[in-house]
Image 1 (cartoon, one colour):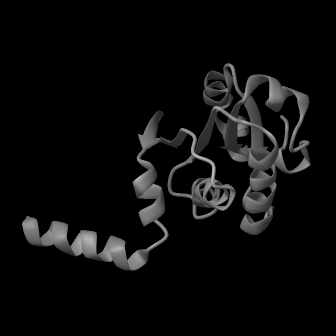
Image 2 (tube, rainbow, N blue to C red):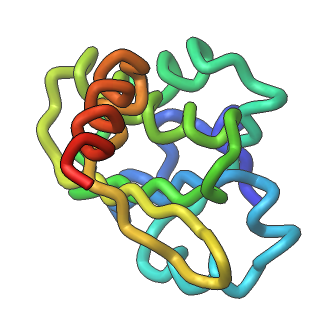
Length: 142
């Protein structure tokens, strides 16, 4: 398992493949087949947000984005983890900092399946007041 925080920001494989999979490190222990599937044609790097502060992760990823013309980033985590959600928000923050525009797939593993999450949902997840308003609106409609 290659770890994102100890990987060279402009490593040879990242420069060659230009497609990055950043995944929660617990997934490779619990569901190695899922990580293997999504690692195809990507440089797969694990991060544990219980061990790494989000600012360190964002800064490191911004360094990658500054040095390598990536074609895509895929983020894969377990759903419902207060730590893993930082992988998703951190990727969006690093893109904002870098000014790069590239496709990002946000994927979560939940109940034996992988679900793609809209990047807008990732952004909204940072704003509890917006989520509260959406819930309130949804409850009023039903």
